[in-house]
Image (cartoon, rainbow, N blue to C red; front, side, top):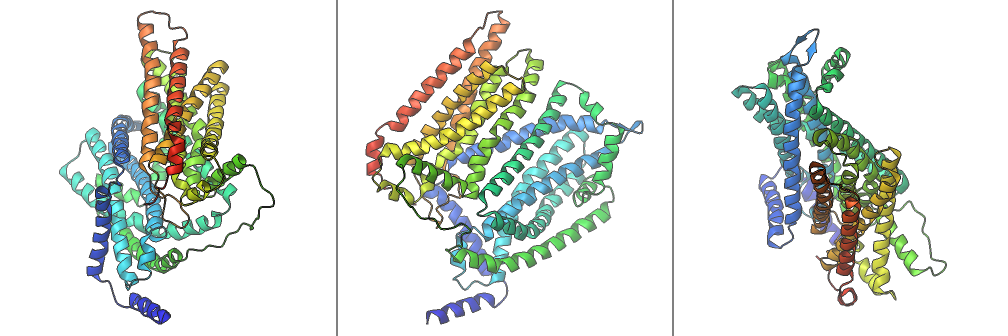
Length: 573
């Protein structure tokens, strides 16, 4: 009887066209779920505020530096003359290409979450909702997300360009049209890439070492490109040497490349009025093809996604191993913590890959920042800047300790029931985090010393201070997560949403970095202005603040920890 009812439900789900009433109900369900987070007190206000500040800062920096770059680029000469129209088209083409690539990457991630990782799929697979209706509801939800990104990105680019070049009302009318048309194209491209991404993801799912190497390499390439952008920003601030980079051959190469960057070239033509009709025809046809592709591909993978979310068991590529002898407690817990992170793709990326790339982050920023500060202020502040960057990026790489308790899930109760002391349980988490932090800090200090940015003794001091502040982040985050533990309801126990603890760690790291780095930098600058001997004040102040902060963090971690541990019964959602 149950099998018959299930067949009837699935049959009903396949029949019929799009039920707009059901679509509206599904969209309303999503809105109510987001609204309920505010009522239930689950909203991460600090994280939301941090994201707003970050977006505002990125937009502000882009407006300032892109505005300056626009003036330089528009004034470049080719064949002995300036061509504002051609330079404007090239500049907008390159920027729209970057926007499209960013939106496609975001679209692939959003499609993956909506179709393969959404908890709702388990429910919808057993409900009489036909695939067309569910597809339309999901597509509208994804389009909304892409539209939000397009509005921020396109409006920022176009407003900055208009500020420097000067435009008419026609430019702003075309901007509105682009904002609504662009998501249709990026969704279609993302829909084509999602099945490929899922195949790669499935292939790498249990090939952990290969996945770690690839993710870390991609992240390293990303920061290398970021360093190139920083170098360009430095050239803009320090003088006109950037003009000499764009010689005749470079400009010809850029012009040739822009002729092939479709559909971004069509968007740029629309904004500048070049080949206006044909560009609009190309954009509309591309949007229609993208919509058809997204409808075809997403519909085909939707049933597979429903089945995948309804299956809790997965086949493992790894061999089943059995315990042959009792191991030591602390090493066993350390191994458990490491494997839990290493075998979870999102944890591996957020935790280990970022930690291993941290030295490059510090080096690239130091390479640009040290000379920039010295030229603008006339002060050799390499040690102070290195301390600032080490503490800041150390906090960003230590966000994995923000889930030290929550990522255990229900397994935390199993460990708690074992004959293990609370110190062994907590110290295993702290020690693993410290090992990762120490490796990252050592590599960062060695790289700075090897590049000749700081001396060997300064590198050792930077390592010690960075490690102490790393312990501060780890201890505070672990205890804070323990006090506000929230276990996942998923079968794999993976935490897929950022918690308030992550935001707390990031904000705390930013405050400490600005506090320590800012104090020693300002005091050194004042000493130079007053012709006062500065001496070893940086070492004394930074070292003292690091020791005091570490002692306070240790006290916060251990305060009534034993009683709290044995009384612990929370963690459920």
